[in-house]
Image 1 (tube, one colour):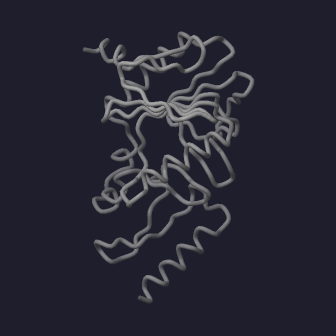
Image 2 (cartoon, one colour):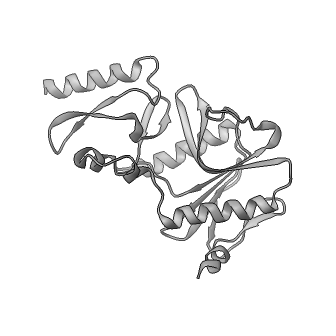
Image 3 (cartoon, helix red, strand yellow):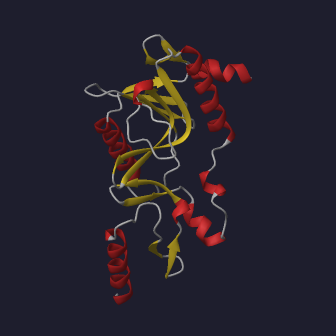
Length: 220
């Protein structure tokens, strides 16, 4: 009992220290081995109000001493969909918009960073720098998530908090693409969540759409 009390104390102290963000090594108790092991910062996917959200599969990385690529890389389908949607949207967007693809970091608050797979910015709101974006994109498109959501209720809490934070940040539309179940969710402030199948057209903004099934048919 003393071991777990001390572990929780150390964990609380670590989270409270200044400069934690993505650079600190945090501690956890591995129930399978009953020992405390450091979790390196490269296994942190996002930060939520100072709380690290780890990559899915990070426990296996710790146990097997795997590299970060084993959890941070996308699979073929996710990477291909991202590039094809990016190409489709880029050719349709007006010149006043900037489109980014990749794991763009959005600096929502001092200790809150969220990732966007595809983001569309007003050109005047986009700053080219080597820092996370402190400005919100107009549209954020997410293809699945790499976050560890193994604990009970973690999935609902994760999506609710991320969606709320993105909207409060100033994002005007969030599009979630779920590759395993071939479905799409669209979140717009003040409106009910919209649900779509892959065969349906997804409106990104006026005059800009994509259709996942048509994109898939190009490969088949």
